[in-house]
Image (tube, rainbow over all chains, first blue to last red):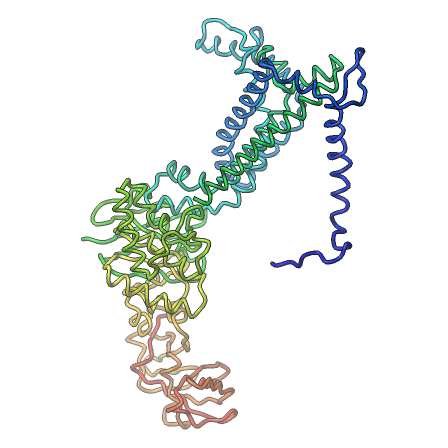
Length: 284
Length: 345
């Protein structure tokens, strides 16, 4: 359907409400944060309006570069793990009976209702030496003695994948439900085994959805600051942890703001790169 | 025997029997249409031949090899789906090359074959277009070319032309038949359109409620339907109840007729007479007496509706043999013995 371009100011009417919400809840706080990132910090936890770059300068060190690199690496790993698990899972889910699908979706939604703290403590119990899953393995005779699986990178990754998995499934679900099931059948009649049909037809046909999902999980994982502290060692702490630390415990708002702005810029840059790569692939 | 043989093929979904005990032989190189109303099991039968559904019972043999349990991708067949199922992320050429790519054929060979097929479907030069930029008829051709790219042993089509408009559909029917004859490939088409079946098939298989009612050449099905269902489903027909007394004298709708026999020892039967076989005359002389209730003049054909003892029958004639009748006028209906098909009650 072709629509006419808006003629009068009144035609923009429907946009006022969302625009207001966006300004009040996003533009204003974000602008405040950018402003604060240039302010001068004072001893005792206060800051005065100024225009200094010292907060950004302090950030340009090897230590923070490492933390930033680790945060990005962790978020990318979480995004890839989630998508690798969720695409086959959701694909099989959409081929199940309606009733079974509802049960699974309700279960996934109930995971969403858990707070990050509860997820963190639950996993720290499961990974502990005294009450963890290794005790089960010992009982089954797979392991000789129980041991603690945390703090470790694996524990952080597991916790974050667990937390992001329901979101991933819920984002993929509509696209997979809409996927014409005869596409896979056609691939099979044309000589592809079910697994090859999945990789040569289902995955490529969903490429845009998968890219969008990767970006979403990546951004979601980048903001995680509790699980790395609960399940990891200090070297597994992300930039979000440091931002929280600076803002709340060190009372250094300008520096926390500068780090947050930097993180947003890097994230936007990466997302733009991904989208551009996707466009290029499409044109080729 | 080479070709496709179905023995006792049955498919049950829970308590519902979709296909019941089907016996069918499709000799190599023939064109078969599975024809029937929706829900008659024709698509399920095709899916079993393709291996997309497994039969509950029975066996499917292709060229003397039992393929009942062979997975779809090892059956070396080509199939066109009702939705066409063209891969949206691939171009026209890549879609057609897909079966070759899956089989690991060389790039050069793939390219050559795609060009051959595009020429065959009159779409040369379209290889690099995305499938979303094609018209309905062009997509149809691409789906056919893709199914034929490995020169399959079996060519299966599920309601392939149903998405096209009437004119294009008629043209594609002729084209598909000519293509099949040129390639000599064993072809099975599912359709609910009897014109389509009559146009294309060597053998029409009429199905109803999961069973085969008749399998014969189109003209045989039309001229000598096996039962009232087939007579009524293929073309239009007049079905009239007939009774015979012990001496073999036949009455139709309570009026005696001469020259028609129901066969020895048969007291009740149904007569099927095609509208174009009904001869209207003056009343009397052994004709059934009736009254004209309506005349529909379509230009090319004239349909005369006649009421005989409360039953409406239709006679079709050409403008050259226009019957001299008017609405409300009494008329005689001659039943010529050689065009009446006697169907068991």
